[in-house]
Image (cartoon, rainbow, N blue to C red; front, side):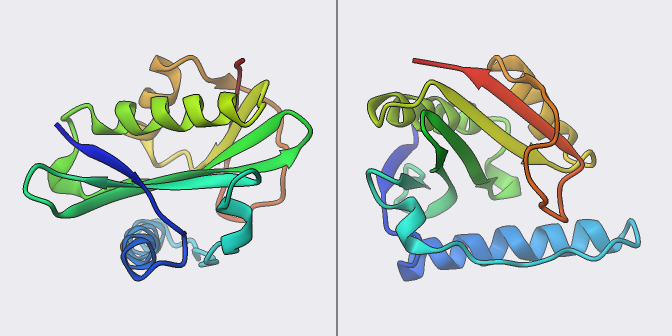
Length: 154
């Protein structure tokens, strides 16, 4: 079973996982002849009560994934940078991470979670649908996003 550890988003471990995530997106976008815009998050946005950032640690102690939530406006938090190394996928750890982020958002007073993603991330879209997210109108200007989802919580 994986462990979820709260960590500052600018910690070297968290930063390395974000770099892996961004690298994977750049490669995936390049195959579609699309440019990926890399932007590392502001640490304050993922520090309670504004948000939280979690890393996933496997049974052998390796850090293999990450994700966070950040406050957008009163009662609404955004899920960001949900990532698992490819060799760890299919074990339920994405669902575990997303559930814990939702729990943390509720603890911080959230009434709604939103997220954006790219249509090429089909497994992610499946996870979001399976956990109660539904398509919503575009809520931001993220150049990397083509789909937006929301879920009432709390």
